[in-house]
Length: 110
Image 1 (cartoon, one colour):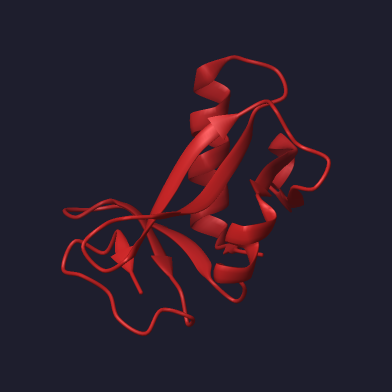
Image 2 (image 1 turned 90 degrees about the vertical axis):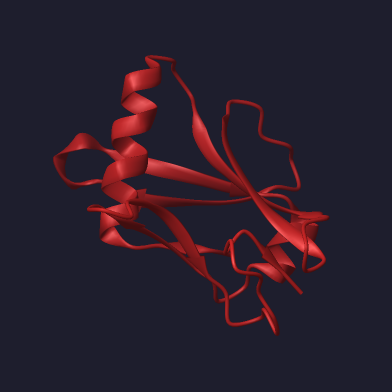
C-alpha cells in the first residue's frame, strides 16, 4: 500500500474538501502504458470495491484522508510514498522503490 507524507495528506484533504462531495477517497492506481511500461493514475473516487485496499491518514484536526488502491496496483505500490511539493515545481510525486526504471516525466516506470 502506498504511504502519504504529511504534506501530501494535507493537500489531498484540501482538494477533497474543495470537491464538496461526501465519501470521496483518493484512488491511486498503476496502469499498463506510459513510456516505461506502467503509469500512475490518481483521481477521487466514491466507489470502493470489496477487494480494494484502503488506508486512512490523519489530516490534522480536519479528520482523515482515505486512500484506495485496487489489489493488483497495491502489489506494485508496496513501499511507495506519495509526496507533495509546493513551490516553483509544485505537485505530487511518487517515490516507488519497486521501480527499476523511470522516464523523465516521472509518471511512468517499469
